[in-house]
Every structure is written in C-alpha cells, then in structure tokens.
Image (tube, rainbow over all chains, first blue to last red; front, side, top):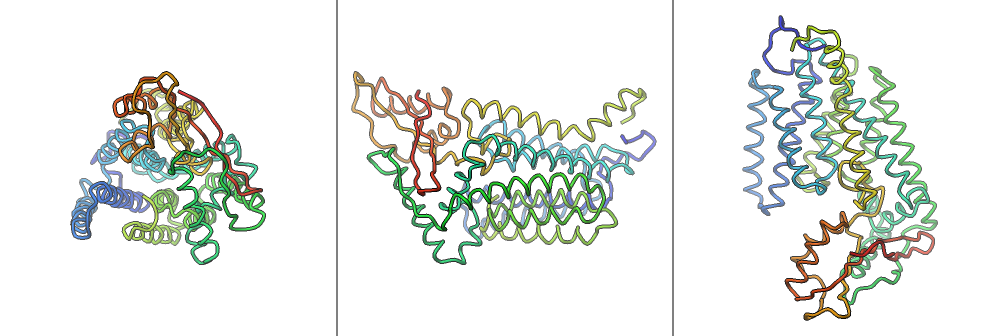
Amino acid sequence: MWRKTTEANDGSAGENPQLLWAGGFMLLVAVITGCKLLQEYYELGFWPMAGLVSVGALLLLAERLIPQVRNHWMLWLGLSLGVATHIVTNWPGPANHAYVFVYLCLILLVTAWQAPEDRALVFAKNTQYLLLAILVIATFQRIITPGYLDGSINAFWLANGGYGKPLYTFSSGWSEVVRSNHELLNGYYNGTPYRVDSLQLEAPISNLRFWGQVVSIGTLATEMVVGVLFVWGRTAAWKHVPLIGLVLLVFVTREESGFLSLLCIMGIANTGSGSTAWRWIYVALIAAMQLLLLANFGFV
Amino acid sequence: MNFPHKAAYKWMRFFSLYGVSILVVLVAGVQLAHRNAGLNSWKGGGFGMYADYHSVYTKLLLKASKDAKGKGPRGPDYPLAELFSDAQLYPCNNTMQPVKDHYKHVYGINKMFIHVWLPVFNPDSATIHLELHKSW
C-alpha cells in the first residue's frame, strides 16, 4: 500500500492513465478558475484575459511534459494548502466547490504516496467515498431544511429562475415570467421604504407546489441512487451511467460547470482498463464545460 | 514511506482509504453546528446549495431606538453591500457589529437594533413574505 523503501522514489504519482488524466484536468480546472476569478476581480478585458490564459496553459503544459514534476505530491500539497488557506481566511464565504477541489487535491496527494501498484485502487476508492459523502451530506441538509420536502423552496426557485435556465430560455412564456418575478423581488428587497408585507409573484406553471415537490423528491432520490451505485458498482463500467446522468442533469438545471468538472474528475478516477470509453466521455464533458466557462456560460 | 510496525501500517492504510472522507464529514459537522447558530446552508462546506433560500433573500432592517441621537438611518447605499452580505450569510454578533458600527459612524445613531427577516414562499398562492428571525 504505502511506498516501500526499495522502490524508486521519484515523488511523482505514477503513470496510471486515470491519474494522468485526472491530475491534468485538476490543473486545468485550477488554471481556468484562477483566470476567471482574476478576470472578475480586476475586470479584465479580452486581451489581458487571453494573456493570462496563455500563461496558465504554458505552466500546465510544462507540468504535463516534465516527468519529474508531473503529478508530484508537492504539487497537490501546495494546491490543497493554497485553496484551504483561502477557505479558512474567507470563511464562510467560499463556495462548496472550493472544498471539493481541496478534497480532490488531498486524494491525489495521498495517492502519490502509495506504492505504484496500489495507486489506481486508492485513487478510485477515495473518490467513491468522497462522492458518497458529499451526496449523503447534501441529502441530509435538504431533509432537515423546513420547506424543502413540502416543495416550497424548489417552487420558489422554479418561479424565480434558480433552476433550468438552459431549459426555460426555450420557453418565451416561462422566461418572461421569471424575468418579471426577478424584477419584482429586486424591488421588494431593495426599494425604499422597506417592505415586509407579502409580495405576489406570478406562477410560471400551474400546480407550482406539486412541481416543487417533484423537484425535491427527484433531487433526493437522484443524489442517493448515484452515490450508492458509484460505490456499489466498484469497477463495473455501468456505474458511470448514473454519474454522467447526474452531471448532465445538474448542467441543464444549474449550469455549475466548475463543480461538474470536479465530478467528472471523480469519474475519471474510476475508469480502469475496462472502461476507457467512459474516460473519453468525461474528458469531452470537462473540455466542453471549461470552454463554456471561458465563454462566460455557467459558474466557476 | 516504510512502516516497520504492523499497527502503524494498518492505521496508515485506513487513513489512506478513508482519511479524506472522514475530513469531509468533520467539516460538514462543523458547518451543521454553525448552521444551527444561523449560518445559511449554502456556504461553509456542508453542501447545502439549493437546500434553502439563498442569503441574498435574507433582509436586514435597521431600527433606531426611540431615544437615539443622530440624523437617523436612510436606505443602505452601495458600500454597505459587503458588510450586509456577511451579515446576511451568517447573522450573528460578529457580523452585526460592523453593520452597527458603520451606521453609528455614518449617521451618528447611538442606539439601534438590526432585525433579520427570512423569506417564506407560499407555492399555492405564489406569494413571498418575510418573517422576523432575530434582532441584534
């Protein structure tokens, strides 16, 4: 399990294809996320942003092409410490995606410390447990929140546009209702004098409570099924179907490109020699999502 | 790394497989404790996105005491947004004090309360109203 002293100790995380792809995409996500955050913070135009992305791409290529530093454990230690410091110093502001990034860096760090023959197994197992833990905790949070199971909270998101932007943009009626509700809420919260009376919104669909409950129950069921199947499936190729289904579902409902790329990296970690086709699907998904992020579609 | 002792090897093997997941659960436990104290479920490492209303829908209202001195409060302007976002995200003494200090500094009010109102949406009538959560 842990590297024996007789083995070559070059500090790299080995040459398993899962590790190489996952490591590369972790860095790609870090580079693009970093560029996007700098762009937003300093309000960079096209050319400064293009320069920043080019520098990031060169660093990424250097890391990939130099075997001595490729997937080195110090890289993952440095990245995890850097982002963890950001989380601690800005707590509770940073998004949960930043935590997932740190957890994945720690997994790559632990994996790099294993004996070469154990790395693929340790990497895959850790990502299975990580995904299960995240989905169980997310489900628990929803269950204990008043208004979630009765559909109120999801009905609010349906009426206010928190869900399904890529879907409802094709429905001009729904789009118009969401825009109008958004403006009403903006006035309700920011207008003076302050209001605490109730505000009438327009329901984008009939039976709003029912559809809110459908989203609530559907979300809970999906999260639990995907989490359990991903661990239970061990090395089976079919286990990638529910994970990719979850990625696509979240993408069309919430456009969280950064988080979904991290989910795909967990998927790559579980693509052994019998499931290389799935690895290419994850690769295509991450590439598409990161390109969309650069094109200002979706969230970091 | 070489582990001559079987027990040490076993522990390291355990942590190499489950250590990160245990950390995830511990961080989420801390977040849940803070959530019980008022932290919005969207943040803090507890994976509660979309479980509740976002903190931008938490409304903070400032009330000057009847015997307060000063020019009196007006609507919050742009520079207050950052102070408010922290207070909206986690309404507690630590986040409310900077808001009060700001009002004291800008308007000269010496006695005030900040009321925290949380949203409640009724999907049957498609109406939203605010309920008083706490005062500071």
